[in-house]
Image 1 (cartoon, helix red, strand yellow):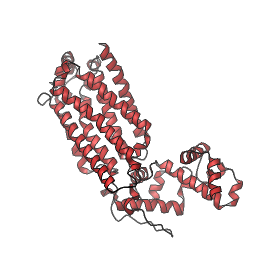
Image 2 (cartoon, helix red, strand yellow):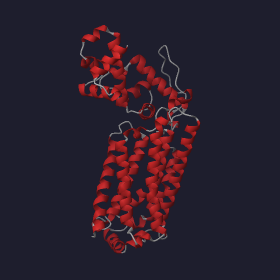
Image 3 (cartoon, helix red, strand yellow):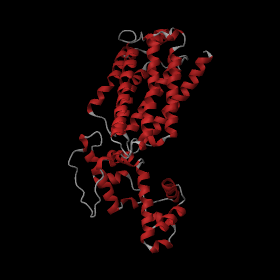
Image 4 (cartoon, one colour):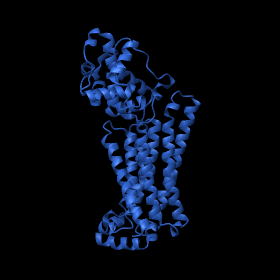
Amino acid sequence: MGLLQELNYVIGCVCASIGIVVSIIFIAVNNEGSHARKLLAAILFSLSLFCFSYAVVGTQFYLEFPHLWRVPATFSGLVPALLYLYVRSVLNQEFRLKPYDYLLAIPGLLIFVHFFPFYMLSGDEKRVIILQLLTDKKLALMEIDGLFPLGFGMIIRSSSGIAFTFLSFLKIHQHKRNSQLKESTTYSQNLEIYKWLYFLLIIISFSYILLILWNFLAISDVIEFFVAISFTTAGLILFISTYLFCNPKILYGFQGWINENGLLPDAVETEPKMSKSPFSYSDESSFSPEMRKEIRSAIENHFKYNKPFIAPGYKIKDLSLELDIPVYLISSFINHEYGMNFNEFINDHRVDHITDILNESAESQSFTLEAVAQSAGFNSRTTFIAAVKKKSGMTPSAYFSKKTTAL
């Protein structure tokens, strides 16, 4: 193995591991079921498998594990569709797939069918073919182990990649232009999301451009295709992971759009009666104006009159049962409208509730802040301090002293 291939192996495996870990974290901490976050995790996971598969080409890995050869190929065919669905879900604030979205998996399915005869071979038969392909990697690039004509898989990947990326760019441009034309007050608030989506599309588009160049211009005579694509995919994973680490708020998607165009419900002076939605949530895949208004009104009225958040250990499932609204809808709504997760949202209300207690009850002044915080639903001093600092950037004593003095 040459120096370049060794470097490719190390960098590819490290970045693939980072991508897999990050995608698992997205799923593991996604207790509230964010749809966009699931899609982003799927993109990272697919890129990671793709990166690893190219990083180990110069080793004996596939001769030892022949059944893994071409397995990541199907995932590479799914990335363009996943990318488009992710962009659309962020722009449209979607919380589930539409029925026809499953048709977008056709490129990945075609690649699976393309390599299906190879998948059915025995381990020894696969080793013979793999050894031939690794000896002359141009044959691997031509995909002579596939069912359809030579280069079919490359054509599917590159054409679907360019097509879905173009559609994604077009969707972002139209959404951004409409927001600017409306002179939306939240446009500047969400400008960072547009930048992120453009950044994601540009860096992924670069990999498809490479795919086309290697496939049609025979650049593999100068730089080995597997090395170039492995380095490119490793860079994609590293850039995406770093960008999200530095800008975690991006994971919540667009915020504040529910306040636009008079969608806020009027102030309610008496406690409203909870009623069933006039439409079926199961028929929706994104927030309609009516749904936004209804969910916001339901949550705010419930919090105003019943204050369920003062119960220690209050969970999103509890709120879902109390309002008869699915967990995924509440979660997605809070993420998009308030730019925080459910626990942050609850703790934010608890902090406001403490301010009300301190200003409405003279007796509360004789209690410690920790005692008042416990009555507001905080079950630990650490969580209480962290919530106040996150909301105000101040210590609890400084923050509540300022709030009570001002009022």
